[in-house]
Length: 294
Image (cartoon, rainbow, N blue to C red):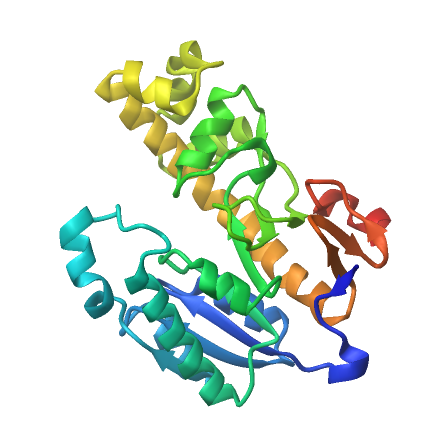
């Protein structure tokens, strides 16, 4: 059965939106700036981060709960960056976060936006807000371009792609493989690097030529076979692409997706996303086709 993500006829045009932030808060700023009519609450696990300061500046409700005390012991056990996604400590933390948010809102949120949030979400949180959590990724998740930061761009380069996209998806219990709502317009890799060079980052196009011999290999194989200089080049290139994609991709599709949901345009059945009643392909609505897809 199709599940409408939000029904403005039933609940009104103003959603209660929670933005989870851990850093600068620029995604949250774009969402709220382009959809100012909603009731926003900002949650952060990092007191004093830029996103928290933006929330105060915007006079949006702010909830703060550091993850550090909850995960300190388990990090000693597993090591930094290796804490299991669904360990009891993470679930306890997510339960506390949820209770604080819902107490402040007086109800569960209508939508949760992971707007630069650096903690893994547990299955408990995904179940609690089923199909109500949005996240953005700087790569095409339908092609397996997962990984933090510049890694998604590196995978696209190694696959021989000429362009990259950002993906806005509904969070499920997978790792960045939830049903896709929107993908950004393609961003040309070669043009992006050329433009970055004109702004002072030298050697990007030459660097791209240097790593072309690895095309067709996977990221893990590249990291195993490439020299340190080639790895550094790949990282620099990937970061340049990621920075440009954040602006032309993430900052466009996240606010746009929120607007679609708020307007009652989005429904889900299984892994199929519907926009204005039309079933989307696995890659969702692509912004260059936005006029024809709704």
